[in-house]
Length: 244
Image (cartoon, rainbow, N blue to C red; front, side, top):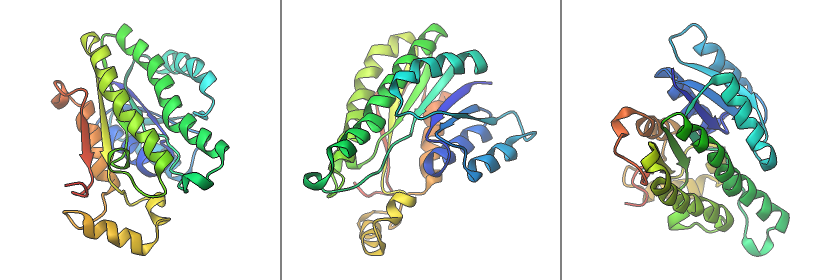
């Protein structure tokens, strides 16, 4: 049974991805700062229900300096890590001119620096074990832009460049690296936009709806599967046709 590490897996998109991967037989290592009631329920659902499982590991990914020891601990406890899904991110919005410097630094640290360092140590393990898969959760905002999300957009754009270049670096060692760029997903983050903005996004999309969590989880599942053996360095957009 392959192990897949999913960050930010205590709720929302991360939890949906963890559930989906466990359903198809992966041993999911769910990393988050704390265990939520939703994650606890998902863990219990999987117990004795097929080969897939979800295991919670508490860790604050803002503590970048401690990431190497986290990876050593995970490899010791769970064995080879086949997959990494870099999902954890802050969705903080705000006009750049008014955003506090500490908030900018916090966004860049968690959304860009942390996944890059985590990937560094995970990919070392994958190369040693003969291959693996990395999926970075980006956003259409990284390429389209959105008012009030300039710093968030910058962090997500950086993941796209990271994905393409890393794919070239590690492809010959059997590691596939791809990104999924969700559109505006029906989550807490889009709830904050308000009904008027949400309806505007819906009207703009080709399918006249917001993207569901399950839509994005299905894309991640595909990229981790054998069906995606020859896919690397790509960005799979899942946005209900918002950017069509």
